[in-house]
Length: 130
Image (cartoon, rainbow, N blue to C red):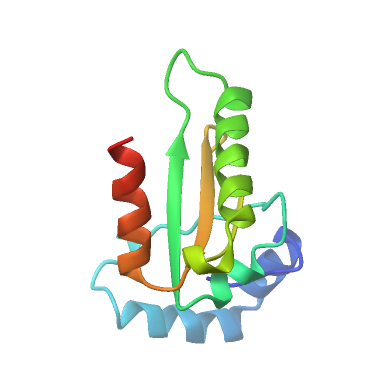
């Protein structure tokens, strides 16, 4: 992940052929087919830094299903993010933030910082069985 001041700042970086060319070369060493890689830009509704500074960061994408509204899905994700952010430190949550994905009008992303993968799994399993 990279934090950009704005989408325009990222575009300016992409337009710098020399610097961006070096990055593209490095990325191509990680994958034989870079066309399979996907890059998303998320406009977070709150500061996501705590989620990314945690030992483990969970990134969840949500797609608005046919028959649902973006507003309803956004409201549910906002509720989840607020509940996670309000959790006591003993719960192992460092913070949560979410926002719409710029490239896909019916998608959102949620970032959650956890103390460990195991804590994330325990919380998920506990809520699935509620």
